[in-house]
Image 1 (cartoon, one colour):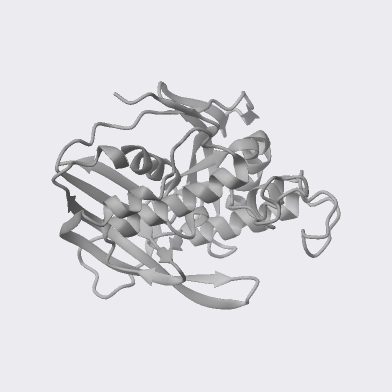
Image 2 (tube, helix red, strand yellow):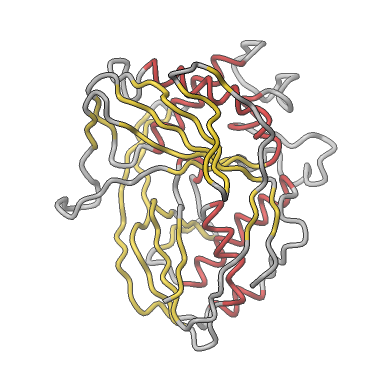
Length: 326
């Protein structure tokens, strides 16, 4: 078994309960990210400046640290990255049935008392501000998701660990805990088999050299994973000692896509900044890849992809994936 990595990454789970009848998109990632960002900024902004870029607190405030992370002037990569990658992903349930046609699935309805469960994975220093994020989730739920009359309440917030979950907040007690954030221990699985199934459980939106990629060949997946992980390493130094060699891309070109059960899912999101509805989408479903040499050289990259997602819009929950030997 490969040596386990210890990474400054922590996963959390939140359970919301519908207080009223509500209708949300089948994939509510953009809705949750937008509501959380708007609410967090309203709660923590001390200066009320219209933009974060000129704010003197932009390197320490809980809002830009999560949603608009800026590279400090003494950051070793400040000349390359004025803005760093967002240090979180959302883990959003995608509710799909086989009954819908076309690319856009029907919305999901919630009756009063029905739960909406989602996760958040935080990287590095962002974990220090978890109490602010829990409070923002409480307030965004109370204000309404997808409309002011679609109210939810936060029932529970938990840290996820290999040994189970630890409650941070329960509505019944109203008490918020803030223990030290445990690191993630990541040990890649044995992928010496000749086939691997990659399942995109949330839309995977891969853009390579400004081109949207679909269908997803194995070398596309590896290029996109390297692109994302290199940006995270440059921004946060999370992956010291991890080999992110471009040689893997060339090796990946020899691997065939032998079965493809994916489809393209179109979603709509409203951009507050651009004040317009936008169409975004990605691949969902399963692809089976085959290699006579096995997949062990890619095991660590695929494991990191399972933890940190792949492609664009990961802070909206896009790019969630699983890789399993066949």
